[in-house]
Length: 347
Ligand SMILES: C[S@@+](CC[C@H](N)C(=O)[O-])C[C@H]1O[C@@H](n2cnc3c(N)ncnc32)[C@H](O)[C@@H]1O
Image: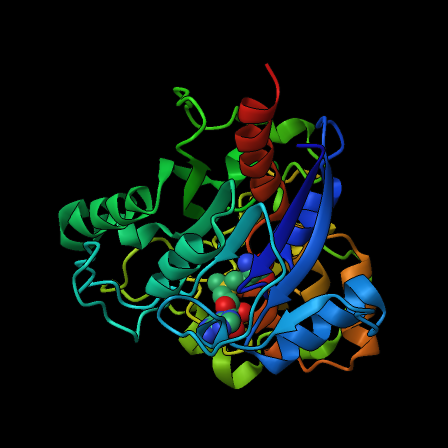
């Protein structure tokens, strides 16, 4: 195999695509043959950012449920591909009970993935989802998913990884399913090697904060401060602001979340010089803000030109945070894709 054709499913703004684009040291080249994304803003962003708005023949499918498979014989036929990439939506998986031959639940996109693997038989796949799926029914849902993927003819590796161990200062745990066709001789693969955060581009969240003036809309409004910053003994988790290691960035951060759930930084911290020292902040009067979209892109490992695309598209803050918060961190995805492919394509 000298070229890996990949299809980017549930593409969002392309965390997986950016990861593939950054992989340089494999004995094969990549060819992007298509992407699939149901949400208009995400598809528009993807098309504009990577292709300047002109897909020039690249296949685009709006809804994965419209793809031709054995369960949908009149659907859209996809270009052939060797690598299936997809961070599928975190729906409720509580009733996954998939066994080949049994009736499946069409409502759950996981089944579309299984049908696609059956129909197109790519050599590899990398799937991503929230860590919470590992805890459903004491792990049995995850076991079922792994078995269902194996039943499609793959060796499957399951890794529970934290983005902060792979080059971005964000505590974001994600489950990855990495699969290779069982025509390959199975190798014992452990998780990809971790990276030293202190040597990464942004060793802490402080390093990626904009030091210049930012839009005043990012500052917590006076009337909202009490809800956001008031410490309620019933809340779980700490209320700390000014975290050197950011909490997981959320898709709904345009709304003002409580400070134990989201990322807020005080002007004192932003303008100080030690990322690991929390300044004494007056929670009543000190200006405190959420992270900006540019900082959000950085926290997910995207390049700064994503912010240029966002501005060009005049994307609202709430639409932007949704795209950013749904994305898969680029360096984490890179580590997983590279690890899987290099393990099977090099000796
Ligand atoms: C968790 S996000 C993945 C984001 C992506 N990994 C990234 O880096 O931006 C899931 C994506 O699947 C999309 N999606 C949901 N249902 C879909 C469907 N039926 N067909 C295609 N895409 C869908 C959502 O709009 C969302 O962008």
